[in-house]
Image 1 (cartoon, rainbow, N blue to C red):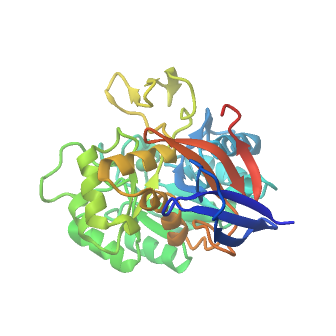
Image 2 (tube, protein in one colour):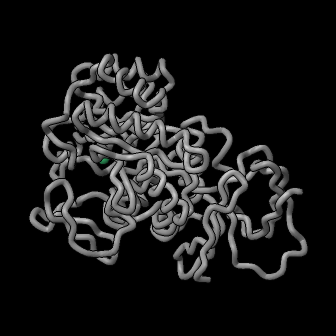
Length: 384
Ligand SMILES: [Zn+2]
């Protein structure tokens, strides 16, 4: 028996019926008989940059498969059905150990369906303050293919995305090697010149990681890495639209320049995401998480990472740019799926895996009612 899911299409608010068979979307039809509904249906959200969640850090030594499973289940409540656990700049041993754990987690019977692979952000980034962001200076290093192969192996060949700085020694050959191995290269935490950015894109780099962040506060108004990445049509931009990392007008300019097909929303959440507001110890320092989701080191008054889920990015994208729900959802599902060749997800179409999120919109807020992964309900909002 096929299971039928009904609601309003995220594309045009028209009532639809989705028939699911064996975890796959079997058919999609207009639903002429659906009574009044305010429930939208969209493809499950895809977040290619998640450092941790609900106090489980993918970057902590001693990470366990259980912790990854718990984080995954909690992410389902936010409408995310696919994500890339992200490891940042760390000692090689931590990266090897944690990629091994993540590889095991990606093979778990149910939660593993949400983890097609991983994002390695660093350690091959700019050592310079401001560009380096919160990454540890001690562990930043130049690209080394043999060292990377050790990580790739530990990760069971599931590193799908690598963020590097194009200006560091050895970046060019590293990009070539990644492209040959079908690994998507992204530029981030860098101060590349126009020529270095162009060269990286020519070699096959496809993405800019959290464009506008991972950049020093004081930069030359013309000679800075943001303009070239904005202007280069070969580069898609990932952006953090949590309301804190980029001002509204900057998001709007990025949207207008790149077009929605070339933007990917990421949460870049740290492990304090999903936790109640308060003071926490993070990377050995006191950080504060406000009720609004702002995460800062009060001592330096700088960001301590992001704490709001991808659905907040969708909400903000709509209110900052006036874009439609359809465009905003594509930026959080179809676009990342396409970039990474995840052809079984990111859209509601016959043949795709039945990864769906059902939600209501209340005053521009997305209230997740149900999340479906490969045809199975994995989250249901019991409050409503
Ligand atoms: Zn970063």
